[in-house]
Length: 225
Image (cartoon, rainbow, N blue to C red):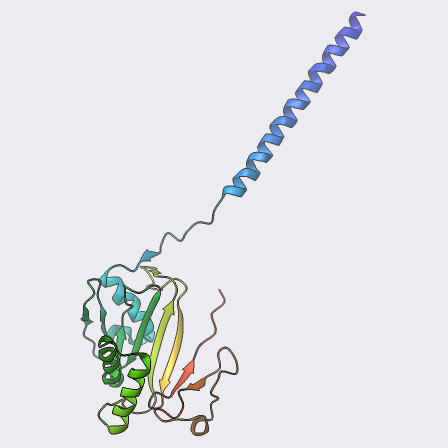
């Protein structure tokens, strides 16, 4: 009788230990699962908002070819909402900063001989003219010789994206992409051999053919990182 009681007691203790170990294991696994569920992706700690004049200049220069950035003139709206010249340059490029009052990011860099054309567009827009009115007015002024667009083949480089944060070390804007424009006033599909619509996502094509604003559009494919 005593042996039976002794064996029953030992068995009860063994089962209790096993149940306790299983319970502890289940709690650990459940805790790991819970932790996985609530874990969220970490944000890039390097990225900062483009909210200073210095940041506007740094990110605008990214629109220019890398080897030309140091010598570019930089113009555009500052954080106070004034259109100013941030930096006088000594080469052929003028960079236009992102407008901090507009969502997303859009900086540009164009050949200095296009500046009369670009400045006229900004002036007409400030007067409240619509896109069509601006197109028609500049068309007439270029035709008459009143407004110069320089020689054919001048470029506009555009650096744009939906985000308005940048890396202060590299000056790259989060998710920004490039697009290029080559102005060819009065050019057509026949005179250039280019299609009027892109054949592929990165294929050059001619937009506004036969007008003062005829230009070759080039949109590079995104880099795969």
